[in-house]
Image (cartoon, rainbow, N blue to C red; front, side, top):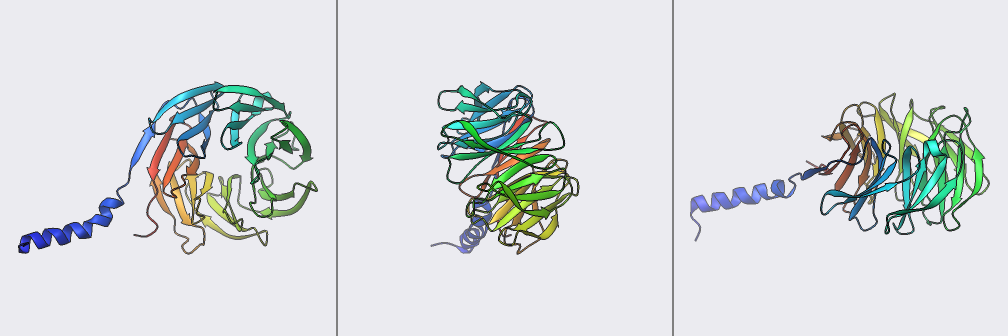
Amino acid sequence: MLGRRGIRVLLLLTFLMPVFSQTKQTYKIKNVGKSPNFIALSPDGNRMYATSFGTNELIGVDLSQRIVDQNIMVGASPLGFALAERGKIALVACKDAGVVTIVDLENSHVIGDINVGGFPNSVTVSPRGYRAYVTDYGRSREGQLHIVDIRDRRTTATMKLGAAPFTAVVSPVTELVYVIMGGDNEIWVVDPESLTVVKKIAVGEAPDGIAITPDGKRVFVANSRSNDLSVIDAQMNRTLVTIPVGKMPFGVAVSPDGSRVFVVNSASRNVSVLPTDLSSLQAKTFKVDKGPTSVVVGSDNRTVYVVNELSNTIVVTDAPPDRN
């Protein structure tokens, strides 16, 4: 039988058990190239990839070993990229080369380049997986959106846009493309079939990062100069609310279950977390490393990966719990 002291200890352990189960686990992967900017997680969650702007490489990371084990040379000044064909290939926008480099990830070699011209800076793959959208700064104040057939490895259409298209997301429901127009402080909604802009939505100053919920109902845009997050109703195509976050927000990601949005605050060296249903407008934050730029959330909706440009690292951590 338990004595009085034993019962007190048992009750104390029972009380503390939820706290212990929520202990935050954090580690850092070092030497991720030079000036890494963008990351992507493999479909099985075992590997992470990052573009190394300073060394013109696509970097591969073994997450179980927590080490870099792939260094694949691509075109000059690689920026945004996307995985395709069930994670077997990567499509990398190489800004100063004017190409999208196609990388065979299983065999660690370049398959070839798709010449798009201009200054390509990001790649987004459609939900169906056979089409990619490449944003391109262009060589004047007029940017472009290139549509690439992934299977045929070629550009099928090019659409002229406004100033500084930075990146884009594709609706998993309507297949409309939401393009950040950095020079206009707007999101342009593009119909890729008719190659027309169906809506222009005003957001904050200097929009940089964008993400969409899995049900396609809300789009989140990080505005780096106004230090806030614009929340767009994708059914009405209008901004619902603007929420203050940290300094110089850049990358944005929505958890796979659609419940939370994560915003990287580059100058604050932290990440803001908010519920996507806007049940709270008060963000939780957690610290990362120096110069964070991009964020990805794992399939468990808890593990968060943040790449840090100024420290050449990827921080892997547990997101704060939904409730205290």
